[in-house]
Length: 337
Image 1 (cartoon, one colour):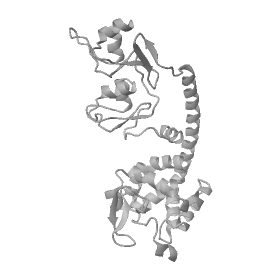
Image 2 (image 1 turned 90 degrees about the vertical axis):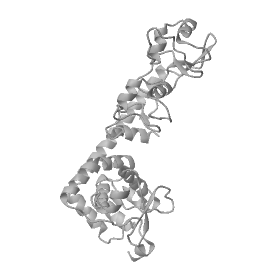
Image 3 (image 1 turned 180 degrees about the horizontal axis):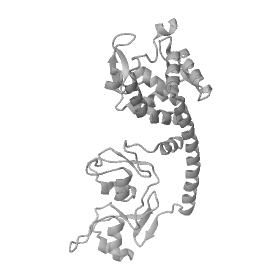
Image 4 (image 1 turned 45 degrees about the horizontal axis):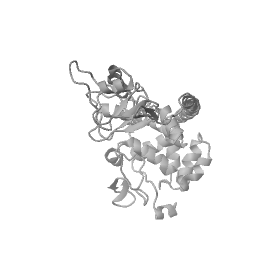
């Protein structure tokens, strides 16, 4: 222990437990994230929650409330993110800062996957006592009672129940991934990607999610395209979600604009799409080949919650109110790369 104190610890104990009310609120807010991290990274949810409680004072410590750092993780030489200065073992030490506390939970998981903590992952994932003692042995904190404090918190609040939820989520993810792989294989078999097809002088291509389209040329209008490609004008308006104004001239797409020759889909093959500056919802819809109504519903867009530049839009699944995908989907998307 003296050696660890001389070298300096990776993480220090910044706060003592707070009253039960704030403890219950902390668990209610962060239990889901801890379960998710367990299923994704193999760290017991009980350990994550106990460390979060202890290091952040139930989320009420200065470091947690001002910098969203719930685990007292210091900067270290490999950290390139935001930082904040805080007195701990020494004055004015450098700690990591996060835009969102959920990032702190993710970084905590990644941090524990360093070589220094490798022995922990040889333990059974439900062996919370072994994990607590291992964290102390590996020098996570300087407090000589660190392992006992963690074990006491876990047993007092029955945090092992969340380990069982993590195990269940792991199993669900495996089943979900297997089923989704079967569906994807079937779709690829039924919808093989075709090469460019020439429609007269037009090069018709297939989008990522198998929708035929052309790129508009100078002088194109929907009425003229309908005659050229033996289609009806209304098909161009409907497939490309252009509102047809009675008595107005036929719509003229800009040069290079995507013109779909088939209806857009309700979901994409990719999971996310990042919006560009000055891009409208229609622009995004044309770019990914997904109907505007589907993008709106999947991403809970509204006048009160409009699309923003640089926003990541979900193309497959409806996000939760916090903007994240359902846990089981997050599990699959990370594991599948």
